[in-house]
Length: 71
Image 1 (cartoon, rainbow, N blue to C red):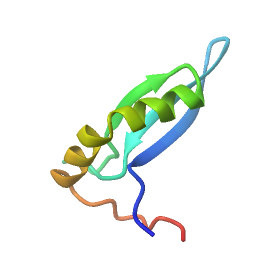
Image 2 (cartoon, rainbow, N blue to C red):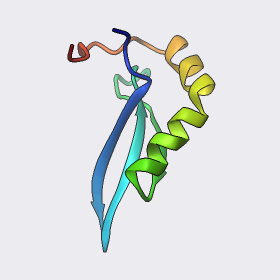
Image 3 (cartoon, rainbow, N blue to C red):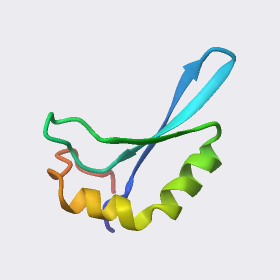
Image 4 (cartoon, rainbow, N blue to C red):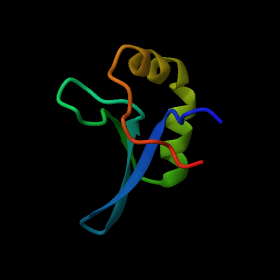
């Protein structure tokens, strides 16, 4: 099993929710890089799939994710 490209997290906003996409790596400050915000989960995942190459390049040039991905 390989590590994921990233994560989609739901967060509340006035009148509903938005879905934030984060890369599976850490930036210089030790945080997961935020990549995009979408109005739906499906849109967030579609955006990540469409930007696969850029996300992989970011992961390759960043610090590794210290948290183990669940098997």
